[in-house]
Image (cartoon, rainbow, N blue to C red; front, side, top):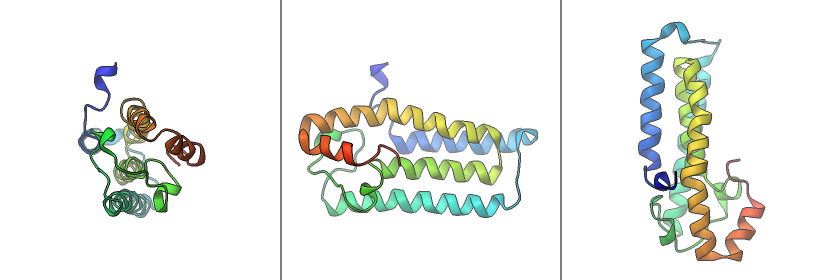
Length: 153
């Protein structure tokens, strides 16, 4: 399974999950379970997700470190403030929230099940390999950051 590590760009994976969630919501409306206010909740969750992800990218840019998730060994610094003080992976958290927002928009039960699957895939094949690379590059500094800040939230 190591051949899947750092192979699929997270944004592309998120897009695939989004298409599946939306397509399933349209194709199998009987599997949808709307709740009162689901559209307002969906927009709120989606916007929060986008804001969290964008904040992570902005912080990486300001720190002049790579935003390329396929090459964590190119990181030039550890960013531990702002959204990175709340989550070690705010960009991935933002993607998961965006998927949750889409699931709420369509109110598709499959979507609600796919969000944790996205998180599990990201943890195993993207985040853990990134963490290994960052530990090798930054050692104790990154280990201390890991001890201080949770992986997701």
